[in-house]
Image (cartoon, rainbow, N blue to C red; front, side):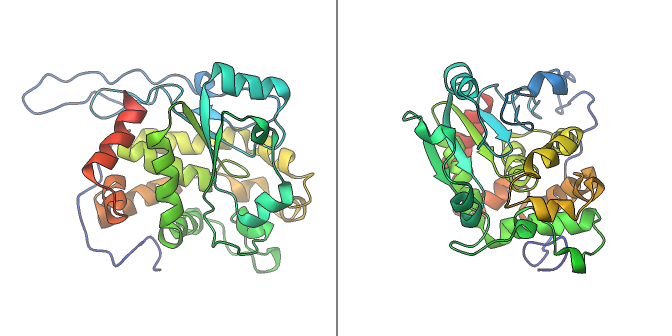
Length: 294
């Protein structure tokens, strides 16, 4: 795979930019987009996670917004307290959990507290090969310390595009869960940054969230990166790998997500086109969009 490409680059529609200003449709008066809630409003504060937030409130290009309680993104859910579980199920209405971690991570960590809740549906859609043994460096998108390359935005965008090209089945299946859920869906991995960020960005793009709002949502994880690393460091699976990397190496860079969105736009006409390439129909896409926005 060439840098920044999912297939042979074949052009396509130009990316739509968003500058936070008014939207305008030819023949209509410009209208203000819905107010984007402050980042603090979207954080879900729990005892056992540090990087959970609700996509609800993000504006869409057609004047709607992502509805609260439809899509939550998170880091590892292994440490949830009893009160966390009650809040997720009873207050936030979570019905489905999408786990993007590898088979190695899932088997090593074991079942978390949410597995004891009979009403929840659990969906494991790893973004690595089925049954493949995955190191912590690979799971956290970190190459071995001894051969560490420059960790610029291109490094990360190439890695994220790899998820879409090598496990399109898992990405597609994760979004199908969101589209069919009866309550809120929580998508998570280990840190809630790379794998979760990629799948969430695709969902938001299909729902019509403007480019800059998607980029800002992705970068928001950077505000809690030190806390995320501190939480994962004591775990046998991740501690050694994390101790050999700096916080700066792991920062989510806006230009990384910009490259992902640019590539999706140039090769597929956006996230919707990517899903069509995976076999999604007009009805499937409308179901996902409506689930998130109505």
